[in-house]
Image 1 (tube, helix red, strand yellow):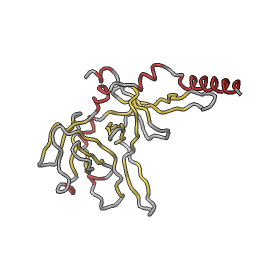
Image 2 (tube, helix red, strand yellow):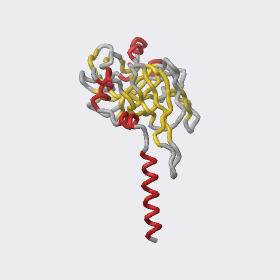
Image 3 (tube, one colour):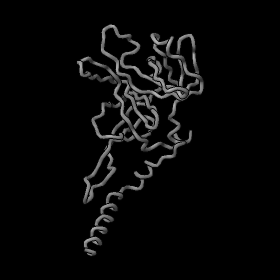
Image 4 (tube, helix red, strand yellow):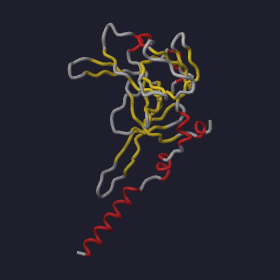
Length: 223
């Protein structure tokens, strides 16, 4: 019995060593300093009460949808802004401002607000460059290898998908990179997708992917 237990312990140690084996450079990329990643956080830098328009720290401007001016107040300068995609019912009477646009929340409240982005703001977006598949768990005696897609953006940064899947990106697609609570998300604003609910009603939305920072170039981290 003692010989069996000794063998089993040695087997477990060897298996764990295989699972932990990986490129040190890949491990280092997972352990990015918060100061580098925080460069991508977005804060309100300007507010125009007349047009219900606000500008964020990467120069993008957004408008609160006119339909919600009375119920959705503007943010204040300095507020952090977080974005997420909206599921908009496909309806001929739907306000064009809302089709495929966003929801956002400001640092002083958890309430989501409907907003839209004017075309001139899209030039400040990052764009998608390429995808590479990386191994996050090598083959071992117990588990098979695991892989994740890593997306490279136009500033040289790389972001790893939190889950496996098929992701709708084409080279040059403009990306809105945002933090939502404790996770990062990339929203493809150059493509729209749609889905149906249980009642058969169709909804349009911008596809988004939950990601983890994988590599932040020094020129971004030092800005």
